View 1 (cartoon, helix red, strand yellow):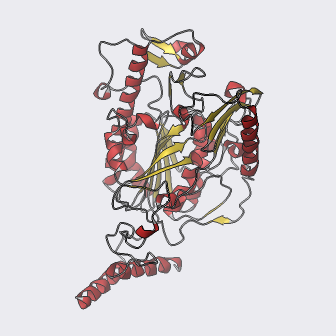
View 2 (cartoon, rainbow, N blue to C red):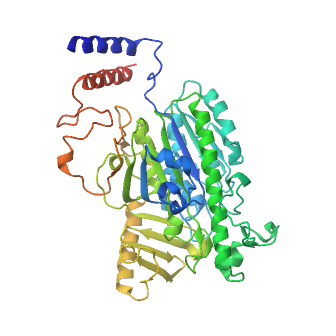
View 3 (cartoon, rainbow, N blue to C red):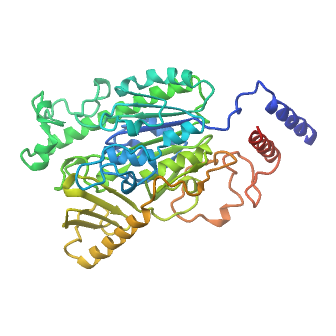
Length: 500
């Protein structure tokens, strides 16, 4: 048997080095990033929502890492998208950071994820239905970009892959939906009550075309008061938009699979912010008020070859997407970052909540700071306008401690200022290289559903399956037997490419 295995490995080595072998000719992994705007995670069936709003995302999550407390690093689209694209907090990328409306585009001096990947040999493409950030700064680094409706995204995938040729691709599909107005296609309008009230949310007065159309300003000011049936109808329309986005996302993935290996692709799905549905008086509808309804967003990441669902409950941030993608792609980056790779968490390492912050010119220069224990919301132009929530005792954020506990408020304000100061970086300074996986992308896999939010049982380490390969592992974590030999072959192949 050993001689048979040996001959098999020799054949594998010969096949590996054959010039016509292209399956693993390039170590770089394709990256497929999906962003749905205005998507709160608690309305996705992939996160346990009662309505089956995301059947396709459910299936993707079966072989991915699901972050249950992912938080956007901004309260609305421009600053949050900027943090996704740069790995920086708004204090550094400056998009909508000033308390008065000033910078609304990513400065040229700030590196974007698309620029880093393009310079590393990727073909980079962005297709977006969002107009707010479709500007030079946000599109820098994309070799191809276009603004169009999300229903047309799938038609662009084949031509993009054809243009890419043999290059690995970084494709970003950025939805506007389920952003208001909530108008799901009939096929996906599954939840509205046909006998219920006619109501929809629009942006401006001039957008009011049908009976029941209301603007978010009218609702938030109290000029228009919606009853329970109207609120339920709005949520039903919103859920229909999610169902539509889910199918459109899957349509694009099926096009991608026709010419590329989905199993070897890094897949990331997230959002820039959530949406409000009458949960609190500060903002009854729309988005921008940084409590959990607005900040907690989906984040689902599939690593190449991953099998099984992994759940991570620690607080993570939008800024963490940038370094995580580079880590999974095995790309070395030299530059300033606020985000940290999530790959250690994905591989089971327990980690404390990661503090998050964001700012905007809205509401007199609103700023938030969330550290896992507290959520502080304050106005930079009026610090008396502050809200402080104890996330352990009051997870729904209904009891404002800012007035009842001024000592605690001062303590968290001091912590916030120290965190912002320590997070402020020189975006033009390269510093030391941030090296992600020089030997290739880290493997993340699970043979079954697992929860890695807490400490792992050390007794599991010697018996767990090694990175989903189905083989036993030694104490060092290296697979033994013929799989280990193949791992050695792969290692030799990787090192050989470094010499070319």
